[in-house]
Image (cartoon, rainbow, N blue to C red; front, side, top):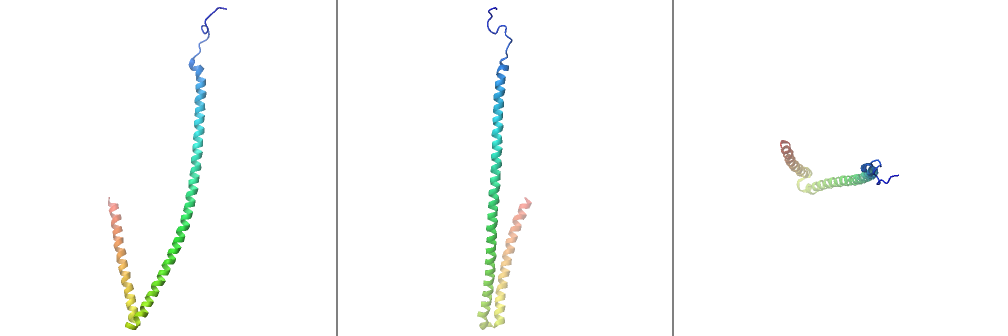
Length: 141
């Protein structure tokens, strides 16, 4: 055998081919790790969304029950107010009857109540006109 320097008669080895397998494996490992991380992230997002939906559902249920209870209490308060106003009207008729007769007392009490109704309706109409003006100005813009 001749003494030839190493690699002189050997087939050429491409450095990119020798190192390419390691680079491809490293890239595949990195891509696999990235895919796993994305899968975990998607699973965490799904879990978060489910927990958030459950929380909002519970909150809505509690709000609905509380609002229903508040509405019932408000209706009862209005019923009691109505009864109190009727008692006040009857009491006013009894108090005025000795001074102006029963029919005069009834006329005075009903007249005062109707004047109150007219005043409330006029105030509500004024507020309605303000609301109409606000929305009319918003539409013309």
